[in-house]
Amino acid sequence: MELIMKAAAVALIAGMMGLLIKRSNPEISLLLSAAAVTMIGIAAMSFAGEIKGLVKTVKTLCGTSDVFLAPVLKCTAVAIITKLTAELCRDASQGACAAAVELAGTVCAMCLAMPLIMNMLKMMGGMV
Image 1 (cartoon, one colour):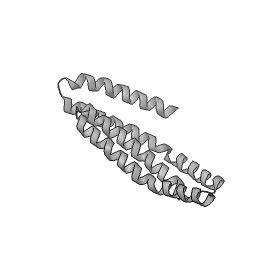
Image 2 (cartoon, rainbow, N blue to C red):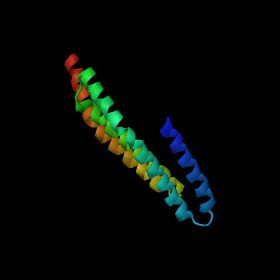
Image 3 (cartoon, helix red, strand yellow):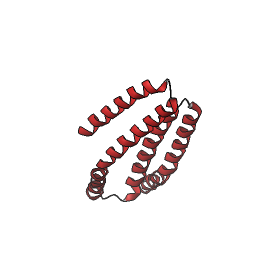
Image 4 (cartoon, helix red, strand yellow):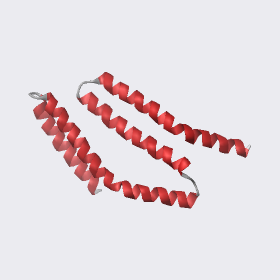
């Protein structure tokens, strides 16, 4: 809860400052947005250890291997990076770049999910 409050405060302050600066210096406004995103991202990474612990617990309880959990986590990371990058491109009025980043993110996520899909199909084939 504390993290989201700090993230919201940083985002709102950066947003308001960006609006003031954007009229005279749009480049600095974009850098301010990128810096705010970086700061919030670094703060959010402090919870990576807790997520790692949860993944280990799930693996132990369910008896699953990294074959099932790794693609899900990697796809989540790709989605986060894609969303943030596309929004920064849109803030810079680069809609085509944002669309290209989203396309690349979709392709990457699909490629990362392929081993999971194949393993699930093998498991379903073994049940029949």
